[in-house]
Length: 374
Ligand code: UD1
Image (cartoon, rainbow, N blue to C red; front, side, top):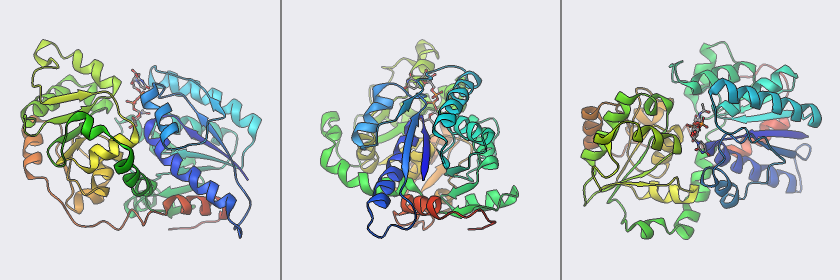
């Protein structure tokens, strides 16, 4: 069986790492159920800086992409269109049995569209998530991808239910979350290999960790100002705030003007984007995490750290219901309030037991094209 995997952005490298490992285990199994899998990885080049891309492949031992489309940066339509054309070319040559896409980036949508036009079945890992905010490019990508996918692999029951409400029931399965698999595998490795806490002079539970990269925050000066001011108020010499900064956000903060200078509060410690192992290490030992990333919200829970989500909604509703996550919006006072109140919550069963990637592979191999519900 031939599978073409499409990746392009950081979170997809992490998810694909887990599924590629599960494919290797499947191929090596003595009593393998079903055919062996030939996986061909296509990197769209959406993320291209070494610390946004190469370092993930190296550290997580992801098989080298056979194709790198080097699409680079640009407007959404422009880059999605370039990817679509190039992926179509790859698929015409490779003629896979499945196209495997992850999450909700422009690379996800381009891969799904290219496959749909060629009538190649699409498997979508992380199907069914919804923010119900169509102004998010990710929401557009998710909805469209789900409606052309044949196999919809959902991380949560809420995702299954979202799909059912949209009339999508065939090929829908609750898998658990491959990010949880990654947290288990790389959590221990990070402890052994990452030296970042020592390099930054940090001790466990004595710092906040923050990430900001969503267009809805970075491209709205009012929201970004509020977030930046809140960071300045939260950070102190005893409890600094560590901010591994996405390149997009760096430029946007610089555009806010002199009142928002980098050295406004030196306890807000801005660092370059970090590798996955270093990020896991920072997450595991933070006092609390402030983020607008979907993946980081869940990783906070996986590592038992309270989270404040710098958005007006979240797709990961179980983290809020279980008490781990507070959705603060992007208003200084609400962020401060949420940080003061955030605490540990209850366990969440939804994300599985660390075997979601194996379930993805089993579904790809064993899929029969019939109406099925999780
Ligand atoms: C993308 C995804 C987002 C995901 C995030 C993970 C879309 C619409 N968004 O957002 O869902 O959560 O990746 O990190 O697909 N840049 C660099 N170097 C890089 C990559 C990006 O400098 O290696 C800069 C460029 O200025 C680029 C900008 O960041 O234009 C935005 O990159 P892009 O991939 O469009 O979106 P992200 O914000 O990274």
